[in-house]
Image (cartoon, rainbow, N blue to C red; front, side, top):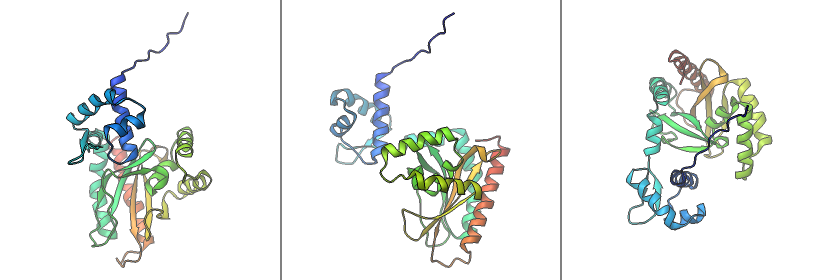
Length: 258
């Protein structure tokens, strides 16, 4: 008896469209048709119609007065409309507002997307000072507090593939430094570290999980602005963050997961 081989299908036009979106998301800057064709090693003629369709459908737009294309928020809006993500944000918002009111610090919620973390919700500080992280902001997982937390409980095989990707594509990735940090995060159930991106900011982050820590779905993070007197110490802020993350995680369980 012969085993049937799995069918493989190709959709060249779709593949080209996805390549364009992935390229523009990766370079994070508008590009012309000529630049896109050169980076994808394709001809201008085979990409012209792809760009036109993506622009017509609202996935791409052009800088005013130029032929440089950039990605719109349409993809992000589609992702946010998926019920699990929408439910997570709905459950988290009231708790995040209470957290910000108590700590006088902003907070945000981030999930993993491939090798990056993406902010899906934020609450501003009631204080006049604070670091604002916009919804949709993304970084490589190893470049943010939220990303560290997401990686800490990631399945080992998946994390290994991620590390291999970073080693091949980033000059700043350091596996030897990261692995013990992830171990410490798992032991402490939280992260507290000086920001490598913004001076004077201490990143505090806790996991949002469903059922147990084997299913971490998001990271709740406070970019703590050092040196301002809010009446709440960094230790008190971290404890409040832990309580908020536990409360959101409990709601996640009651919703049956995200």
